[in-house]
Length: 120
Image 1: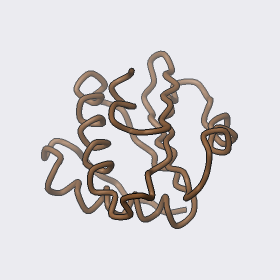
Image 2: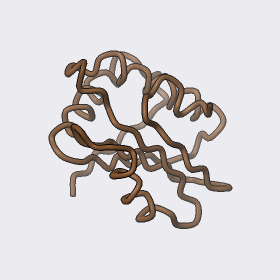
Image 3: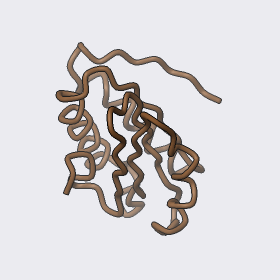
């Protein structure tokens, strides 16, 4: 299991050699792995790796999963310090997970992480 998928159910990491961008695709409620996999090819461009997963709605607060993702990202970024991360979220479920993740960043991540927020 790759460090980015550790502890995340229904997760898939597609590496890219020399990737300087990591796209995290966060799925919607009741989606299946096959549904989310339809969107991964959008990001299959040179120097772009993807991590996709479906948050567990059984725990609607996403506390443990968002903390696990932050730990995974921290571990990944130790070896890939210049990587930019893009979050591609789907529906309310993905947005609720991202909101929880962003709320945890201030307390869980080291100060060396720079965050730029953009919404499209």
